[in-house]
Image 1 (cartoon, rainbow, N blue to C red):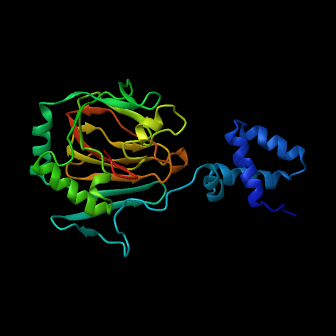
Image 2 (cartoon, rainbow, N blue to C red):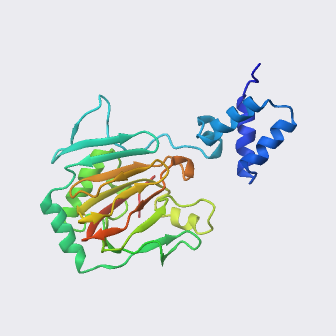
Image 3 (tube, helix red, strand yellow):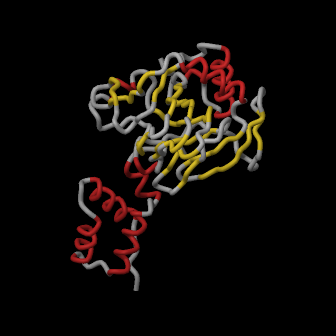
Length: 280
C-alpha cells in the first residue's frame, strides 16, 4: 500500500527546507512519524526535482513576461528590419538562442564606439545598492544610454519588437570585452530580495525579469555562456544571442549562468537586461 502525497505535505517539506533543515533530516522525521520508506523517497525526490507545487510555495511567479512569440514553432521571426532565426529553445529554464540578431556592421560599430570608454567591469552590490569590483567578473565594459546612437537605438527597437517588451523597460546596453583568461563565474541576474540594498535598486525599474546576451566578436577558443544547473553551453558566435527569463527572483528559475574563460582571442558581448517596469 502506498501513502498519498498531499499538497499539504509538499508545502510542509518546502517550509522545512526553507528553514534550513536538510533532506536527510526530513527523511528521518518522516520515518519517525510512520511514513513508509517508498512514500518518503517519492515525496523528497519530487521536491528535489523541482515539483511545481514546491516551487510555487517558495516565491510568487510573474504572469507577464518578455519573450518572443513562438506559437507554431517558427524557425524565423520577422521584426521589421531583420529576420531573426530561432536556433534553440528550452522550457525550464526558459532559454532561447537567436541567430542573425545583429549584422556584422552593427557588431563592429558597437565595438568601435565602446572601445574608447572601456573600464574594469563592475557589478551591482545588493548589500548597499551601489556598484563594486567583483573578483568573479574579469571583463572590461561600459554602458550606452538608451538610444545614445543610431545603432543602439535601432537595436533597442528590434529587441523590444522581438521580445514584446516595452523599450523603456530595458536598461542601457552594456558592452563587455573578455581578453584571454577573462571570465564571469556563475551567478544570477535578478536582485536578491533578501539583501538590504535591493529596495534601493528596485526603485529604478523593479526587478530584472530577463537577460539577452549578444555576441559581437567570437574568440578563437572558449568563452561559452554556461548554464550549470542544466548542463547547457551556448557558443559565442558573432551575430547570435541567448535570451533567458526568470519569473521570480529565486534559484528555482534555474537561471544560474556564467561566462566561461576565454582561452584564445577576444570575446565581445552586448548585454540587455529587462526590468518589470520603466527603467529610469
